[in-house]
Image (spheres, helix red, strand yellow):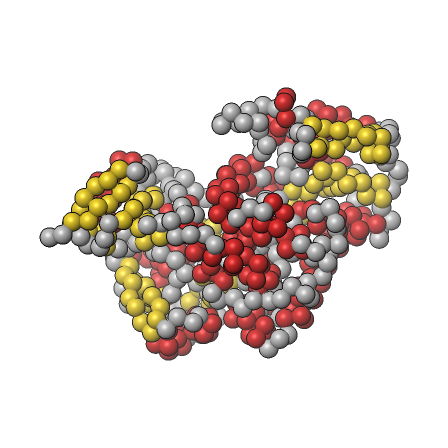
Length: 552
């Protein structure tokens, strides 16, 4: 039998032609801390039952890696939907990623109970223990649409209407077929670790592992503010009859996207004005702390909040945490021996506390301005500020909630806003747009426009960005007095016109190619929207340019 050459981690091996990735992966299991769940062939993601038919570069990813975790979550979603169908003969809607899990609605007219949820979990465990194969089958797109119509999954049938492929891949688990935008595990034995928590009525949290360690207890620490924001978003989408990408596409195809833009912007402004109203009614609040992950729209939100507070009679004073960076030459070094830029140790927290305390005590204070070109703080009398009775500090930055930054300031004087773009809509009931992808697309566009970076550069840097977020930003979300949802229902249509060409520029031999392809596939089901009707004060303008806030 013919052999093929396989290169793995810069070393070359030989295998029989058509050996599966699963069989090849067994020779390298010792390189991984957890179970290998998916692989790549020439930088393209592939299920472990894929055959290597020609000389190729291969790599593997365990369940704890970013690619492996996505594969696990898709498989777990299929397992959950199948179990709900088996137990109560109902479908499910994956509403939104929330914290470490997926907020779901079980689509039945009968109220479910915690007992029902336990039965669903038991069925999921049975399916996982049976090691049932999850197989891929090729069918025509029209056949798939007919099938989903017959089983009353109209959301899925309608979404396939906007895909141009003549054939598509469906996944089969036992007697159930489904369509997913990405690779799934090749059998259910990979999916033995999970939890399902009852929330209320027909709402549950589907929870994958966080660490994927064998003894991990998968818990859900409920964040009421975040849940409220998700439910408000769902209600708003229901009111305007755009629950999935299909509803948005139907609106775009009729040329009525302008109204969707105006509605979406009005909802966001109303949400922010409500926050301003809460602040104005609390006489103790002297400073508003604004934080959130990368590309969540912190700068635009801070500027608009200042304007809204002015209508309440306040005199806002804007402060950026970034201006309190220590000089580059004095900065602590990161793990690579470079001056730290992400951690709180890169900032002069003593200086921040001192100047804010002086301001609150009625003193005139010269605020620093960090010069990123010279790597130094600069002090100039034109940046001298003074707080009057109606002054309020608007502090924005990734470490705004970190106690070290404001430890000298009484808690009663602080109002904390966590900005987080909760993904505005789903592809269908089983396929979600992720907030992290939403933010990544924003950043790809902004990096290209402001720093001339390629999509590949941003994709590569994103792994570090996400690591910092998980360690230094999201743990503080629970301290928020308000969670501000900065997503806009129409934004993926606008971002498509800017981001898609950049993603297509990533070559197939690029290590970031699979991530680029995954994002391209997201855009397959979204029609493009011109940006001409996007207001100049929109959060999206922070990323596509044209903001009326000229310093963004």
